Image (cartoon, rainbow, N blue to C red):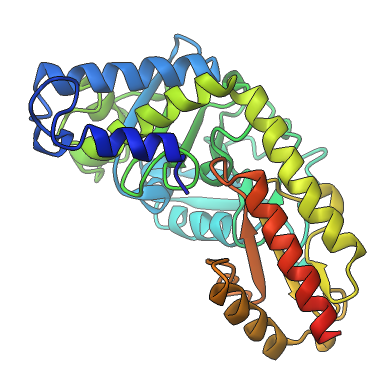
Length: 356
């Protein structure tokens, strides 16, 4: 969901952006008009996140799945890396990295069906690991790593796609972090990579294509090839919207309030149940089921399907859980208003009474 003020401004500027007489979709990416858009987007993002000067901000394409390959291609000098597997996305990233070197899974919650974050205390970091990788918020399973592990001096690489800009982050704790924009920052098609300068170099795996090298894009200021201009423009408008609301601390307060309302309902419901250990719950993605989540034989997929269909009929959309896990999932991304969560909870209360 995108903020309504952003959509209205984009609509107003559709035929004439910034007095240029053109839509952003018609601009040359080499023009001064678009350069101003790109510069403003980067400056606003740096201000929002407090990005240190020794980090590059790259606006790329290909989504998180491309980053699963770019990270090892660019950082796996010793052909070894440590991966924390806390859900489907980190599991996919680890599988991709195995194409390029040895992957050591140093922590995993797969045996718990990814219903929690694995223990990250005293992480057995490999001496020859080039980096330690994690997905900080797993969208499918609804878990969040709230306390970053001690990586014993190794660069921490993080997929933060589904929690990007939802709360303050200390960028200096990461060597590299990336986010698909389509959760909280803009439309699908933009990937933001924030990378420390010392990790940008020529010493990449020999088969790495030019387009897959971070140095290529850092040297060209994200303009090596035609970037996703429209998506970057919308991201820039979202960054300004966030600043107007008070920044990421204010956004965290909004998100905590929304999540608290929904989790409080789940914790007191006799029909609906959350599927994640309380201390690992995400502010962004809340999976839930009918029946008893702790005893999978008592789940009720037929009732789940009925709930999703009836919810959609009253305008509550996109509640079906990921195909790999089933059930339902409410994603409370930044632009989702508190009133939307109130309406969802009210509908769930009604559904519970009718289907008890």
